Image (cartoon, rainbow, N blue to C red; front, side, top):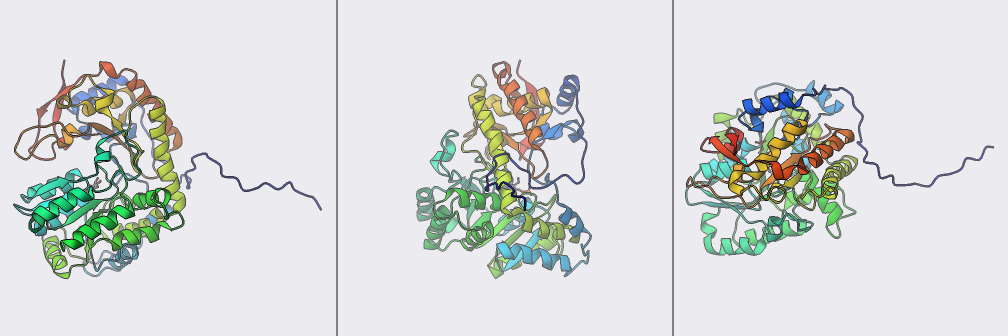
Amino acid sequence: MVQYRRVSEHTFTTIFEPFRIHSVEPLRMTTLDERRSALAGAGFNLFKIHAGDVLIDLLTDSGTGAMSRDQWAALQHGDESYAGSPSYFLFHDAVTDLFPFSHVIPTHQGRAAERILFSVIGGPGKIVPNNTHFDTTRANVEFTGAQALDLVIQEARDPSSSHPFKGNMDIAALERLLAERADDVPVVFVTVTNNSGGGQPVSLENLREVRRVADAHGKPVFLDACRFAENAWFIRTREPGQGARSVPEIVREMAGLADGMTMSAKKDPMGNIGGWLAMNDDDLARQCRDLLILTEGFPTYGGLAGRDLEALAQGLTEVVDHDYLRYRIRSTEYVGQSLLEAGIPVVQPIGGHAVYIDARALLPHVDPLEYPGQSLAVALFEAGGIRTCEIGTVMFGRQPDGSEQAASLDLVRLAIPRRTYTQSHMDYVIEVCRHVAARADALPGYRIVEEPPTLRHFTATFAPIA
Ligand SMILES: Cc1ncc(COP(=O)(O)O)c(C=O)c1O
């Protein structure tokens, strides 16, 4: 008998996409002149660029992921009944398998869930604490006249701090707030992972502390849970004692520490559209459903097609897969580490869905009120057709009283769509970033030419300052 030499199990380190490509979309290469004219035509606002002119689109990880073969197949099962569609029940069961709340209300995306919830529990004089409000969450809180208060730990404000759970809530600050103003606080929110704070996770220990403090004042806790699976993976890999648990188990514990959630299903649930609102409180759920019917649709579809609900139900089973999450978090980390090695300042540790370049540190000659993040984002598009997103003074600088203040950080977010780009696409991104960073001292500041009263980053126009 032939004796084969035996190999022992070996852990290879190549970043391995746990899928192969089934259908491809072409990417169009552009010239420098074409990109310059696209920028001028868009008033230097990357949201206004035609996506066909973008080579690598890192504007957002929201709704931009690739659906799987099984999600495309699930679309065919979509049942478009107006009321009581079987697709709703499938969706409901997939959601409650991970988040066992009594009421699950589909919405067309996350901000619709926010709008409905805060219309019921917000209002003038109210104050909503969160680790860091995402921009739409803040806008929906403030639209009702309430105050959106960010209470993230101090380490989160230092881009170079390597705290493993930089999304954590500052528990002492939450205690102080509730001791002083409990009557005005309708809910305590926790965003997992903390998108505006750098995609940083929240630990289970911190969630338990939030629960303890909220319980002491009889307040509900809600999760803004868009990136729950990435958060759970960080808990599994970083939090002592969690390494042997499965991601679904950790997610269920996170959900068990909350009374409800808002969700944009365009992130971890792997949808191109969708969201939901879930909660245990029957009376609150009734009020939310009443509002849902007014703007979103009947409570068993909430602005989504039956086929969307099917795709989300399938996506929820795929996102908690450990091979997928290992690849996802490692590939984001690879981009971040490569930029760091090139001397480009990035928020550390590297977050789950995105790498955040510290534009204020890279462009120290640009005053925060001249938008260093916008300047860097424009330069990355001009140089290499890479579309990114400013998360800084453009996004957060305009205050409710109309004044303007520098945001706490000026970041440029490179958000990585799920399962969409390959390793060589990421190597190209790194090369372009290095090229731009080497010329950072020549980048101009910007001024705003026109802006709307809220969420100005989506539609404002800019001009470079000579
Ligand atoms: C943390 C967080 N909350 C809420 C939202 C809003 O979700 P949507 O874009 O689906 O309205 C987002 C979207 O990026 C987000 O990242």
